[in-house]
Amino acid sequence: MSHRRAIYPGSFDPVTNGHFDLITRSLGLFDEVIVGVADNEAKNPLFTTEERVDLISRSVGDHEGLTVEPLNGLLVDFCRRREAFVVIRGLRAVSDFEFEFQMALTNRRLEPKIETIFLTPREDCIFLSSRIVKEVARLGGDVSPFVSAPVLSALKEKFPKA
Image (spheres, one colour):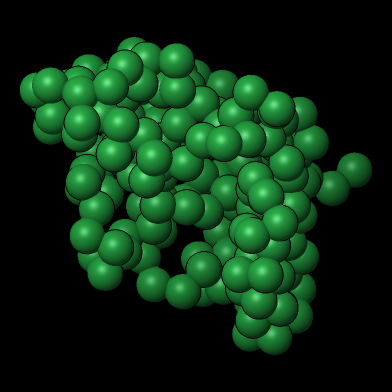
């Protein structure tokens, strides 16, 4: 039987319970899941790539088949290096679909072996986004239902009112 390996790429700035839901469910579908933390300075991230890798690793703990690592450059090149040609993406709403569909087609055009699988989050996570979590934390709101304890602690360091 072949080894099934997938990549779940994203900026994860910060990682939310919605992301953890997709990680957990992906581990049920694949032998190995690589969480690729995108190094995209154009997005002006709150946390460095190293901090985001650490927050995900500390939040999910040890899971057989799960690795978390920085993703630099093109996703298709990362897929080739890791010999993983299934990409996991989350769809929260119809508004996510157009962008994700374009990215999936572009990735497949650049690397024909790549298949993108779209997962929808649990209903209690469907509204969650890193952007919303950061904004609520910045304004002093309680984000504890939306993130892990390590992420909550890191947000409180960045936003003392959180």
